[in-house]
Length: 603
Image (tube, rainbow, N blue to C red):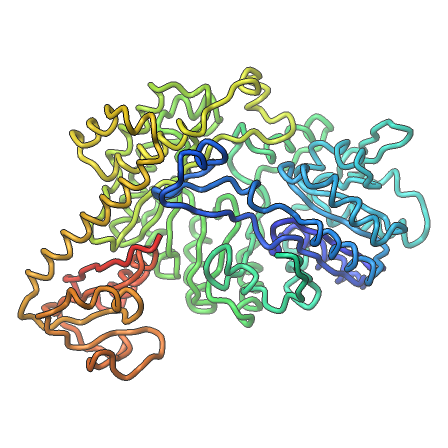
């Protein structure tokens, strides 16, 4: 049969790619339509007051993230292209997977799919439909696949192929005479290695975005807009070890538990199986691996072995959310991960109050361990950030002060910009469904939290890293910034620029008369070379092939450079690239201690 999967805002949707691969292995013809290439809206260093009030939902590293939802509208042209694409292929079965936040788009997407193939069976799956199947069913889908979809979809296709009844399939929900029928789900598959690797053949993927349609040709290129690199997404597990009160996965487990089906918090693939997938992925056009696990967590001895094998067989930079408790228990794990290519740490803090975190979010954080993990990673030259939740109307100023006090234990702003530590701060958003946070605190549904207050508090976190006690106290007592928090963006950017400039001027005076290497001959060098007058530059080091000379100075690859401990090296790079280049230098020249940062601020 011909099976069409539609995904929204995520061409790399692993859920649908797993289902597509499973059905393709059974001999069916599959296609994926990716409607809209991503959810990422504009990031602004200095947003206006109006923008903050209207749609500020995220602040990352001193930058305001304007709400995704107002900036990724699906146009009528794109819906027409969706209908035309479906019409040309004429699938027998159509399915889409979605989270609850995308329900707002279903009243327009479902008719567009139906118009292209009115005879096709239309099914929905994912967290949103599994938690609240009646919403997509009332909008016109024929069935909802609840929970893990491979076996449910396989049974459904088998019934439709033989024209037999599908209404008794475990995991199916449907409407009949206005009444919702939800069949109990089947137990989850424990052996994840039995599933085929997710679909990675891009000839089966079509992207509709920016009012045009294109054939996807490169799995890595699809993710460049999101990650800035040609990336490959992978899951080494399904589920999560945590039970956060605001998470749809927790709500889904609780729902199925009431039906007598216990789903383990986490099910893991064997790491041998993960490596086998990555060997295939490496042959595609990618240069970084992104582990999408909520926590990349396996037994420590297995992870140590995996990182050694990963370095030998894959040897690509990777991002993963490692466990704070595991890293503190076994610091060797940090060394092994970094040696294998782990390039950026991220840990979940949510709030500085352990008590509030436990009672409100059901997260049993150990702040001492978080501080230790950050310190250990920072000592190894890594950059990274912490996830924080603000904008919770039940979090008092007293609890917020715990966060500000805790931050004093983390690395302060690095004036050289060789390392960067910041916060990924999100405003609390309540998902659909009966998540424990709403069940335990029903009053939160009727409360609101001003966007301007959220932005103000988020920026205070960043300034707590940037300012000493007196400076921070003065800022917090300044009524102007409390009334007009958008001014904090400009203050933050100007402050870090001034401090970096002052640092660099002092360093230039210190290295006068020494033989200096420049690492990086790109835009940062071009815009800052006027500062290097009087500096004896021996060579310019560049990783990528380039000219033999720049400004009459020899250009060589770092691996061909002969640098001793007395030679200073000036890294000239964009702010976001500085730490990567810093760690490369430390890795290639362990004897090198005099490394100076010169940053191009373009954020």
